[in-house]
Image (cartoon, rainbow over all chains, first blue to last red; front, side, top):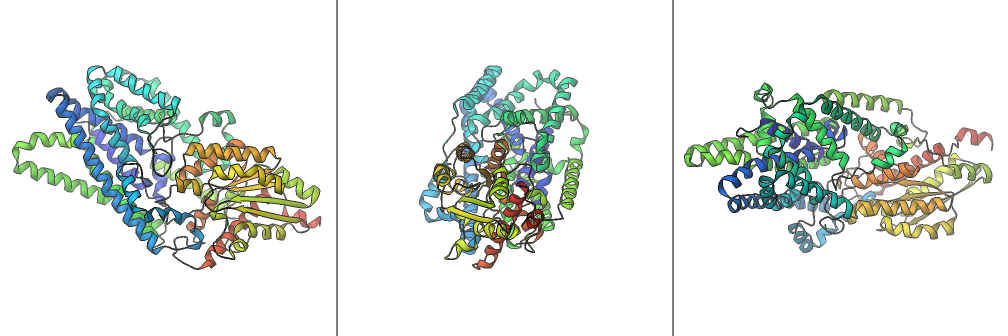
Length: 382
Length: 254
């Protein structure tokens, strides 16, 4: 509990890389990201680990310094993320305005209607500030903001009655499926990630951080659980193969397809949640927290990225925009896409190292802040 | 993970190699066989040609089923499909009627389906949908229900159906999220056992193979017309495949 679990940073770092790659839609390197091999994707990993580290850091703060102070820190974090989101939105607006001004093709007369909202910047920007208007691929941070806003009372309950808190979270999730509610979006519809459903992953992560993982220790060491998890991952892999190769569709029995589809990302389909749990179970089984590889220099880049997740996440979204832009401008082929993917990840690593260096020099000049720096490492990055 | 990925890539390559023999079409319109082969039968189309030598097709769609400008209808894929089918099914009367309204959502189109069926009495309905719903951010579930309503109405009127998804538009891909709607169309088609014309994947394959530069900023209609010509050709191939109207055989029985 006292020492930071580097596996969290490692997997969050990897998730950030995958989110970056997935956000360049034309990218050939997309083939390598986990969403092509199963039901869940990097978003699940990111949200779960964020819940875990959030509880790890703010939970300690709440125990040591009380509800008000720790809540204030959580809300400040939510505010930082909000500012980051609006910053990214500005970049997105610039990109859209550029495309509107320069790109013309009669083939896409219909698609270009998406630029119509530039005709009403007042409404568009206001709706963006309300987190109702969210461009494609900018849904994760708003989800994170809402999760943090709801976190103080949830964390309180988690510290006091962890199992009750988890049951409450599961109940809310079940109610979403029963009653179908979500936050409204602009101009139509609802949030792409329903916060009332996705909170289950976040709270489950927090529950694991506050002793749940200990309680699950025997379960996670059992070979039966491992076999079930692996079997499920293989099943999910087989199903995703049928998405990529139409000719394999016929091997999916109709009753199974009827029961299984659609696999709902908005409301965190049970199949997705289970897929994440299976992935986590397998990862934990084969990578114990004292696994020596975690100290190896090969994994350090991913670990550093995972430790500054907000900064690196935002950078990744920005780099994905920039990468798309370059690919579009040069009508780039697979080689360019691969080069941009690699370069993007290198920039993410370099930035993480730079932030780490800043934290170090700040720590040196103000020794009194060293203790807080540690909290920042984990908690600032909750 | 890398191993699995390379395995997948290998399968993809083999798949691609098998698809290399493409359907006869205008040079440059080649489409991988896997996109236009289907195991679903268009039985009403087969009947219409074999019994009556006459095929009526209704196209229902929004802005991407037409090209802008006064000649837009003549060069858009519904008219090109008609021309392609006439050429490939000689001796048969082929009529394609396009019911295209810009900015129509799938719900609006679904509401109009019964009237179109009564009017045209088609053997086949080609339903292009999804783009306007993505533009307006219609909820995926509502989109699905509209699609199912329309498809059921088509089946009730004893017509075959093909649903066509969105265009691949690499310039707007980061602004217009079509992927989720394409997924809905894919599985609705699968569940209802109807043919999907995967325009998104086909146009993407044209970008990947260098057939078309869909990134190009141009006011010129030449490329847009060629894309629609190729879509019309590919649709004709898919219909002929699914209705088992092997072109060679048709010609000998003429």
